[in-house]
Amino acid sequence: MNPIPLILASASPRRVELLRRLTPDFQVIPSDAAEVHDAALGVRPLCELNARLKATPVAQQHPGHVVLGADTLVWLDGRPLGKPAHPVEARTMLRDLSGNAHEVVTGVCLMQAGSGRMEVFSEVTRVVFRTLDEELIERYLAAVHTLDKAGGYALQEHGDWLVESVAGSHSNVVGLPVEAVGRALARWGLAVTGP
Image 1: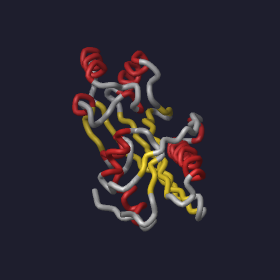
Image 2: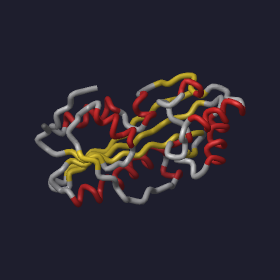
Image 3: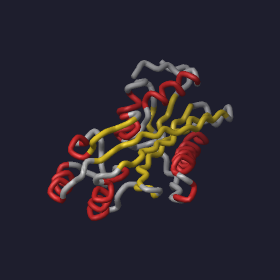
Image 4: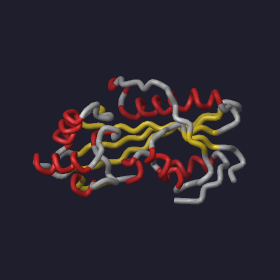
């Protein structure tokens, strides 16, 4: 049992699953904060800002808890690829990623409003895509629900069809850098059982 209660400010089932690798003892309270989409900020500052924006309202409502907010973006050639709005956009994203290297960046914010303590950091993973033909793109779109995934793809769902190599944290590509988050939670005095 954690001495300080932990809240994940995200509705993402992937983040819930990844955080469970570290601790079974947390609540899930999704944040309703609006995200900033200003690519001019740069990818790491943008993800870190959005993680902080997501954590803040939940932390204010639960000042005695440690709140974890996170934001993941796929970054290709200086532009962010968020969650596609529709299948046509997902298809375009996969075509753009085909044969190219990109970065997946997750900003993480730990915040406790009662103490005023906050820690913000980000993790970068480099992903290289195979060259995809139209048939493979269509097969992937038929097999995977892509509209809730940054960049229109999921490493954990038939990622081997698309991805040639991953340099860095695999869990970061899924939505939460488990290793870095585990170290951060330990710094905050929370009991960590994994990864």
